[in-house]
Length: 304
View 1 (cartoon, rainbow, N blue to C red):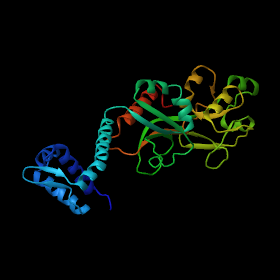
View 2 (view 1 turned 90 degrees about the horizontal axis):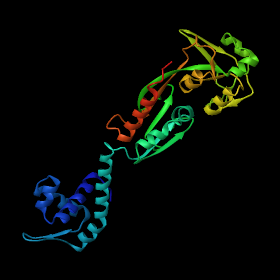
View 3 (view 1 turned 90 degrees about the vertical axis):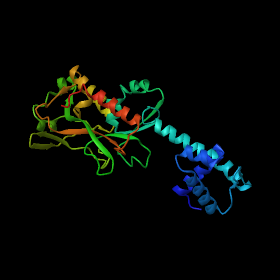
View 4 (view 1 turned 60 degrees about the vertical axis):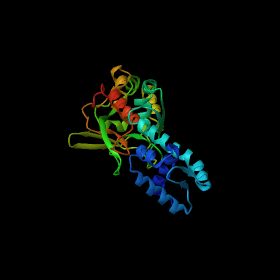
């Protein structure tokens, strides 16, 4: 027997009749007329093929078949009501489980140092922060929200730009003391450059520089081919070579003098950070809370 909305509705009417003890009281509880309740029970009996209620002008009772059906469906109806109550509560309460899909840079350099504050702020919420190379199927894989750099994919997902950051070319003072500072991007060909693997091709990303409408690509070389942003940053700070990395995650190191921005006059190789989630309609409170936290985290950081 196929399950449809009308069958579920009729079953819930039966549960209301049994719980209240009369058609009239069930009608009041459901906000319908007594005749509407009677028709729903008649449709359910016709659908199943047995009489479920023995009713006279003075009494109402379940038949044996009705009693067996009610015993089976009542826990399910209560479970549905409980689930709806919990779901409606999520519109205003930050609770349950939040699954966040992020790239490794965002996870390691932007969120990790601060995410404990979000968890402490919402004691009824558990957070799953999943770092992966590709966005994948956000809905199909059960994610509530994603944070991703670059152009959002063409899809039904809601995408909102949070901030824009430039790609900085940086080196540690110790590296520059040993090898000298390149005066222009073309001189990188003579330096040790930390390579970053493109997960789509398996090859190193090209090094690009943009200033206004001018764009150049510079060939670089180095014996280190890395993937993890934390490892890239750690190796660069240790003086292993020159690296390209989003300025958003390294501003503190630049301010502290642990890294030197080599070409601030080439500021226009940029990436935007977007938040993506499945629906614009009534996002859960936990989703809104996480977006607000990320915006709060990014607010003091310049988009340069």
